[in-house]
Length: 117
Image 1 (cartoon, rainbow, N blue to C red):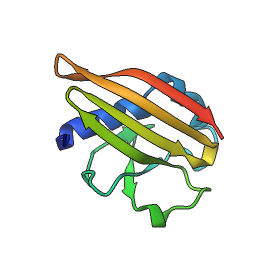
Image 2: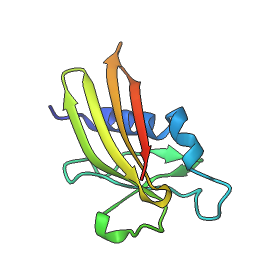
Image 3: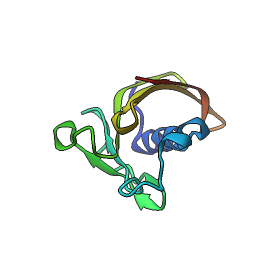
Image 4: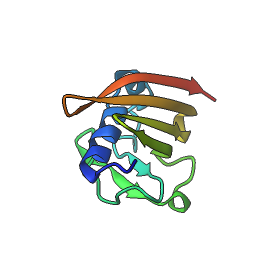
């Protein structure tokens, strides 16, 4: 199933805003207020996502290295009424898997599993 651009934006924004993920952002560290996002090739290019009051730039995987503040959406799989998002946050050594469900036309984070590597 293909997500609309708006659904994709809402799903990714919900993952980035997940309360359990906030502790890893360390916005007090210089350079951490600007977050970048690597998305799968099939994803929309202009999602209009924001974090910490800044627009989140969509970048290609070959444009970043592990010292840059970015999250790599390694897999986004949509099914009827649900989406699984798998990601890594290399600068913090964190990987995650989120399950979101659509209820009353809103995407809600059902589960978020995080692991440090």
